[in-house]
Amino acid sequence: GNSVTQMEGPVTLSEEAFLTINCTYTATGYPSLFWYVQYPGEGLQLLLKATKADDKGSNKGFEATYRKETTSFHLEKGSVQVSDSAVYFCALSTNTGGFKTIFGAGTRLFVKA
Amino acid sequence: DVKVTQSSRYLVKRTGEKVFLECVQDMDHENMFWYRQDPGLGLRLIYFSYDVKMKEKGDIPEGYSVSREKKERFSLILESASTNQTSMYLCASSLKVYGEQFFGPGTRLTVL
Image (tube, rainbow over all chains, first blue to last red; front, top):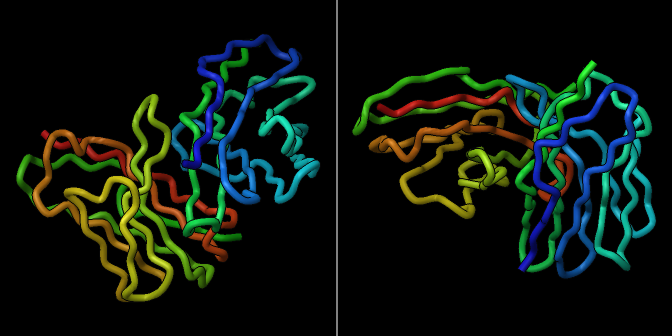
């Protein structure tokens, strides 16, 4: 079946450090891939997305590339800020075998000043 | 901008009570969803609706029901609340059934 696996947290970084949060997936067909972010006390909001292989999604300095050969969609940012502290969710959507959006368990990021 | 609102941010109920969680979206989206969010488990889909009066079970529908009488409103009902339904409940809507979802701020429900 379809699934999303992302690295366990929490991840703790100092300001201006490089961030990678790993995400791999299992899916039939050609899923769309998403990263959502949840700031404290809020709902999830879309950070970036990619709809086909080799697409790169980017937003607010974050990037992720849809790698079909490694079934991965790792989130990266070159220089994190304290304001990036949040929970990050990797997700996939597919219409193969019926509608389904599947979310990973989430990775909490703490950025220290 | 899409706005999804939920009726309460925090709710405390007693075991056995009937609980209504309301969600309203203002962008004319066809699709609406209810999730629960628990630490370490991510988001789990309870129910979704792709049209007025239409509903589909998600992964964990037991103990819940839903109602969608108008396009903009999707209600989650706990017929008889239990302590294991203490959780964060998130409502979302989307234009395409497998596209980007827009989330409300969540309702943290505690069942005593």
